[in-house]
Length: 149
Image (spheres, rainbow, N blue to C red):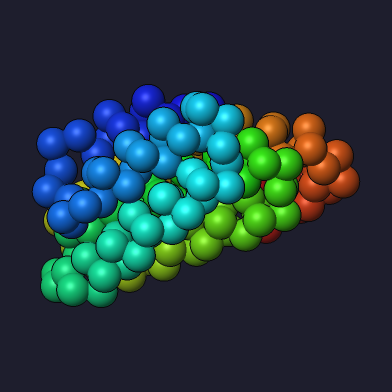
């Protein structure tokens, strides 16, 4: 799990009220062995993050990270719970969001706002993919498809 890198990427960012509480609560709960409660906490952070992202105009790095970090934490929690399919759904949603924001960024400044989220996703993707494939070996064929390369 790469929770430390996720925390580093959002440290010092201006996150929505209550967001840090739910992320930290979810991480503590996950470490204590209760992935379902962790999912609930991460979903609360995700709701706050989506509200922040919807309100952000123009797009800001903290607003995007406020959604990406809980999604990646949800992937962790679902994998800990043995729910690889749900982990894949959240990873896909995260990838879609970052890719959409990246493709819509038309200026250098806009790309810089997306860069941290993109870097975080690219950093964590390999280990999350390995963990999913350990739980569901048939996912290896899915991940080896040309669409990912």
